[in-house]
Image (cartoon, rainbow over all chains, first blue to last red; front, top):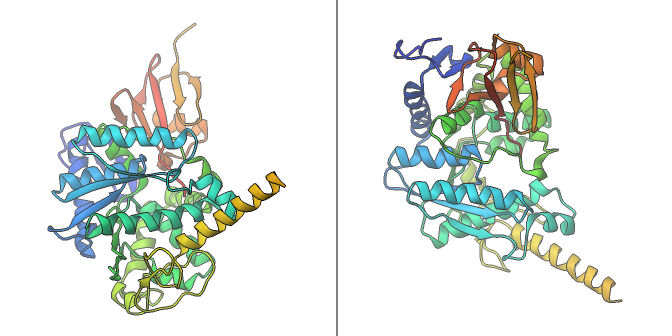
Length: 327
Length: 68
């Protein structure tokens, strides 16, 4: 199969959803154009931005970091060591090796040192690991961004991730989640920095192909905590549809993002209504502007932020266990 | 014994052999793997799904699906 763009070289990537196939050089052009268009469409990034790129060691986040550097953005990587035996060490190695190859040193947060490694925190709080992980990551994204004076946080969520999340939100009629789902979450002030997903137009197949062809050595094993993740069920369903009707995933998600779609509000409207608020865990959540957490001072829409509530639950459980062990 | 195509499913740490020549998409169908969920590589080369693999060659099948 020949490249459909240059019509000379042998194709390396075939993309039925785009009725196309590309040689490596033309695929790089295609991929970067897709990311640029994703950024332009919702003005995710400005040339003067300082971008904090959240990297896990997986393909999507490392590819995101790579392509943003190629596009000329000022970036730093943030790696959060989740404290998962074996997996965290291996993914950290990949991040450090990639960063070194590009002359970078990532910012590293070790959750074990912070007293809240994910496996133990989930056990103690009796919560799903992925839910705990989301709360903890969001907290550190904001904290590191504020401390390092970054103007925006970028994550590697791709088209498949967002389409799967959309399907899950629709199936359960999570109207509040639907109204906030967007590649652009505005800066809510008070340290709740803007969050963007520049890979929202590209599929997992495309990020994996880009990573492989660029020689990016990413961790291919799955996080052992996410084996039963419901997002995998939605991805599987969408993937079956995509096999029969290439391009459906794109139409599904891009149609959802259409400004005329009544299921969702514009990012600015979300902000006015307190759309950037965190909702994980218990406690009253209020709309409006964020304020300082009564416990740690981090920005929150509740009296105590969800991270502090989680940490308190973990601490209580530890004390109960210690009490039982000594008694 | 004649050499065959060696197919390695890297994440599952499994491998199997099939007689060649055979197209990547046919090998994936035999393995019960849907083409949009994987990339198929041979050394430093990325293979399209219609690429014909010959006997004695080795290919790696790498899942692109991430959870969480």
